[in-house]
Image (cartoon, rainbow, N blue to C red; front, side):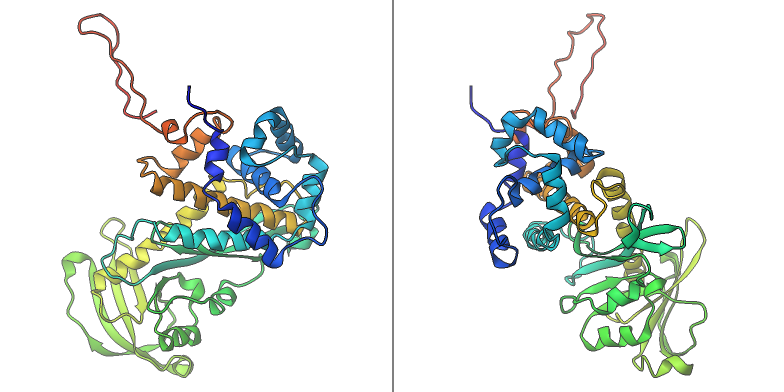
Amino acid sequence: MAHHSTILSQLLQLVDRYEFHKIEQEGFAPKRKYRTLSRWSQFVAMMFAQITRRTSLRDLTGLLDAHSARLYHAGSGPVRRSTLADANNDRPAEFFETLFNRLYHRCSAIAPKKKFRFKNKLYSLDSTVIDLCLSLFPWAHFRRAKGGIKAHTLLDHDGLIPAFVQVTDAKTADIVVARALSLPPGSILAVDRAFVDFAWFAKLNDNKRFFVTRMKKNTCYRVVERNDVRKETGITSDQIIRLTGTKAALCPIPLRRVGYRDPKTGKHYFFLTNIFNLCAKTVADIYKQRWQVELFFKWIKQNLKIKSFLGTSKNAVMTQIWTAMITMLLLAYYKWRAKLGLSITEILKLLQVTLFERRKLYELFAPSLIQTAPANSGQLSLNFNRF
């Protein structure tokens, strides 16, 4: 019988151990060598917590202790609750942020391309608030009796994976993070009305970056040119405009205003952009794709552990969020590399109950072959295409 390491070990092979330790040596090397829990063992434990959705450190370390004989397959050793708690509190979470950025570039190289034919990179930017109990997380003060943090996320539409994540206090305005964002030349950014800032739009235009957003009702403008539209596509207007009033000085460039009526809901939308070489329907479709970042927030909150935390310090919370994002990237990378016809949710659910099995990882996701009963046997015949 062929020897196989555990499923967890094979999944962790997607992380380059040499690069992992190189990151540690570059800026996160400890003054003294860790005696009982290495940073890799900390990462293994926190990633295991993400996949299996452990509810507490005691729950996590208890399960790891039950499988301690197989942890060596993953390059880890025994994990004690107090040691892991101290590691999450004291070891800089920025290490995992750096690891996330390295893994994103590796994932983006094999990610499936977006649905549009234009070659420009397409991103969506938005944020989600993660509620916290103020009595347990006093550093995350949000309102009088409420705590929270905000995860600002730049979603890459090539593969629908996060390209950039910044966690701030919940009071930080979205536009503050957007102004400091660095995008590749020629990229297109889809944002909602919370990001409408005409000085920022002018800066994006000057730097050869493009944007698509919803237009606010109180925006003052004058029409410079009207383009022909195809009403059957849902486009109601396509205009070249210039801002008027006090905002004209902030954004002196011409902009494009596209009107679109949704055939399903009948709702009328107006989009503002500095893209002039794409048809009006494509501009409307770009903004429609912005909804993918909302679906991303919904997915990570439902499938990963970022709504309840294993530690109460800011560093412990950040460590857990970054390991959640890394776990998402690893699952996506494996799905694309193995060319699995399953969703990431299906992969995650199957991994939750098989991480310590010793079998080939690819076989885990192979369709089950169910033998059907002979004809006229009187038995119910089933044919499952998936597990």
